[in-house]
Image (cartoon, rainbow, N blue to C red; front, side, top):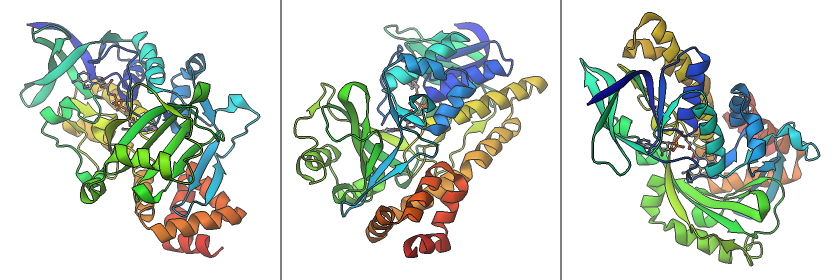
Length: 413
Ligand SMILES: Cc1cc2nc3c(=O)[nH]c(=O)nc-3n(C[C@H](O)[C@H](O)[C@H](O)COP(=O)(O)OP(=O)(O)OC[C@H]3O[C@@H](n4cnc5c(N)ncnc54)[C@H](O)[C@@H]3O)c2cc1C
């Protein structure tokens, strides 16, 4: 039985869906329904790092101050190590360990961070939690709503809207029902996540370690509040398949035997959730993200940075552009694929060059001797360290560094 009709239905209340809801509201759309199959607060397997880009969008939405109210740890830079074990500490540009308010970035458990974003959206739009979307309603080649079930009920409910936004993550039902397959294995990372209490030697940085055991992927340690750390590793799904790597075993081996970490984890305790595994759809693959009456955002649109694995910033950025272009469509009552071409264009004009550069960096990361050389150089040469610091913050510096000449300059400095 059909129920109330909405202007926009958003499937998924994670960072992409909740941001879409708030940006739609900012752009004047009133009749919005935000659906999630979970009840918030809910967990999401993640490294929990909230980068400068995410901080920027949270400021734009006026919700950054609410992160102060939940447990989190401010981070000031990145500690890298190469397969040889050389370590370098690269501060985020503008980071100042004495100024806690500057917040260049922070690590916040997603169960808390996503709840901040969702609860802010909930103040502004209608929400429906514990409702799983199972299918789409289509009429005359346009998506005009969703079908689904409330948790614990067998009754199918139909909800109609002029536009449906798929913000339902890696295994997006919206994308599946539209016939858009998942990203190919070479454009996906498979990764672990685990919480440990009592890892020693934390430095106020997020740590990315290119260790032999998991090359060409990396092992990370991100500091959390209260002596906790988010620990995981990830590598391209096709590499995992080729090398038949058991990710959980590799993580345990690194922690127990790698000389860089065994002392640091000697008394560390894994929490009751154990080691979890999930996939990351990468933005090295430009997935179809719009059509008649529908738009995809966040992981459903495959937007994760192929080098760093960060996806929250791009998820929120896509929510911003979806909000803008859907509101534009309401002005002319045109919800066609052609109308939403502008969403795809603005999104990819904005994040495409950066994703492309990161894809090239990912390829460099596969070459062990080059990684050893660059990180060794950065450990001894201020100029190389500064170039990498600029690269973390700035698209132009990133481009310079991965051009053949830029790379040569860096190595020969
Ligand atoms: C191991 C790992 C580590 C990562 N580390 C980082 C990191 O440190 N920093 C970073 O920025 N990014 C990281 N990422 C990427 C980041 O987690 C994602 O890019 C981000 O969560 C995308 O947000 P989203 O809103 O698109 O999707 P999600 O956060 O996945 O939200 C999707 C929502 O949709 C809901 N949903 C799904 N299906 C349905 C349905 N059928 N009906 C109704 N609701 C539905 C889900 O319950 C969920 O709430 C990591 C990812 C992984 C796997």
